[in-house]
Image (tube, rainbow, N blue to C red; front, side, top):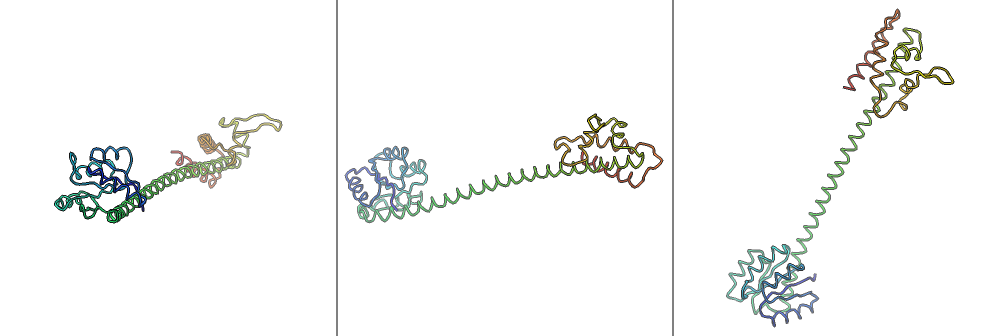
Length: 267
């Protein structure tokens, strides 16, 4: 579990020696001889672990660590301190440092390697959690999208079912109106179209034909968009309003029910 390590210490010879030793453990090591230089490096590229000396001229190690966290929130910080600075190192731990090394005792490649590996393990855990959170976030977003699509599909299906139901009702209603008209008058649908003035009658090779009225007798030929339900309702009212010697009460009542159902559907 190797990674990018930033060594921050004003003792240049020490950091160069440690860089050479840690590079032998396959770490990619960068050095900085001041807090300011370290922050410049972090602003330019990410680092996995930063080992920073507590006591340095200008910006001390704790200040460097705090500002480094602002630039690279995931960076794992290890502080290096002399024996007299244990209390300061403890304060650094409370601020988010993952470990501290006592100088000069712990400034060896084996000790530092172990400390870096521990920090890398914590970083790997943080990244794994973040990756899971991202996957969960993506999954939730996809679920939301699918729910939205399902809602839209259901709405479209509901609208289409409503349109189909309307066409079915129109076909049944106009057919019932024609049957009632035929039963009560003995006349044809052509006569109905001409007398009511609601449906156009045209001449073709077979004679007079109420083409538009014929379309409303079959569900598949009724216009899918904006069918003229009002023409069908007017036709029903026309045949019901006619005085006849043979009123056919049962058929008349059936036709009234169909008209009411059609009217309620279009409200």
